[in-house]
Amino acid sequence: MHEIEPYYQWRDEYISAEDERSPFYNTEYSELYFDKQIYNFLLHPQWDEFGSNTLYLKVLFADYDRRYAIIELIGEWNDAINNDIMMLKRDILELMMDEGIDKFILIGENVLNFHASDDSYYEEWFQEVEDGWIVGVNFSAHVITEFKENNIDYYINFGGAFDDMPWRTLKPLQLFKKIEELLTKRLN
Image (cartoon, rainbow, N blue to C red; front, top):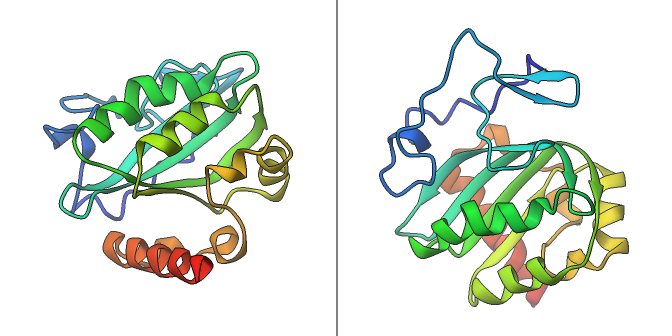
């Protein structure tokens, strides 16, 4: 796992550590020292921590004018033991929402497992984005099944084109517009 870096091809357009409005503003990263781990597996030092010891993230892009953020995740999403959604919502998402972000694109291809608890933080997040939305892109089928079995797909959009999206071939605005178009088609 230590070789899996957060996606870096958009760094010429956005770096969360240099964004004064980002929860990770002024974060310094080691290029040599592996200071994060999931169980016995070291993680690449570019991943950001938010309080979970099994789930890490990277804000790949934030556009405050269009009000969206793209967040890549890695690890085990564990609400049952660690209440990851509570920490994610309180310590990261709420700060972003305070800055006007109400559309969230979650890249989940490196999320290994999901362990549910109740859905109250998802419901709260969904209600607080009001006219916005939350989309899960490229999560594994077994992870999506867990989300669906716990009715969290009511709050996060999964399925169809979101499950196999070639997002790395797109620029952030292209990805945003593609997802927005797909959501509009779903509603019609």
